[in-house]
Length: 227
Figure: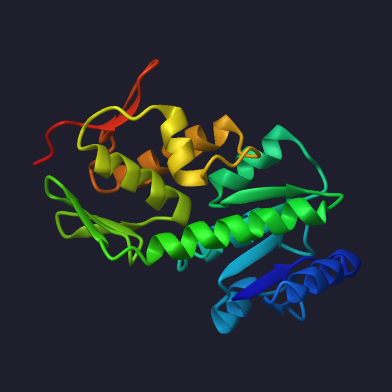
């Protein structure tokens, strides 16, 4: 699999490149940071490791631009291990977060886990799920309703799959975390909240802003009737 490292600190970038190549991954890096969108479209990576502080536009900007055309898994890299940075990374469409100084063992673990979750999940033969008249296409990572559709990131797709499979019953937060992140001990509980908020924002464009219901001590579910 091909991993794009978008990191302007060449020392860090080359350390990551060596470790990932030793694990059998193909690694690509941009020659400059002026047009990351063109770079990602050109190389078509299976994953992006994206630094927040880059020359010119920052990683948050480039992540939001990438999300306009791709659901490729993105792991943010930041020198500032603050809760705000992590939440912002998720809000902008990131799937995970790594803090500097880089812990290589933790980084490799996150890379392996996210790639496995993303591509094993996408290979599920049952790629189409229905809830009323709402269609969830796992293979294309989209949710469609009344001739309109929205694109979902991998994490958003897994959350919606979990809710679709519950068929209107409540799903506990811990169960969703287990389903989406497979007991990843490094995932902050706020990650789920931020992702659900982001999904709801997208659903509003389909007039489905109230599709996901929340109940204290019960979790999340889809509304019982959708025409």
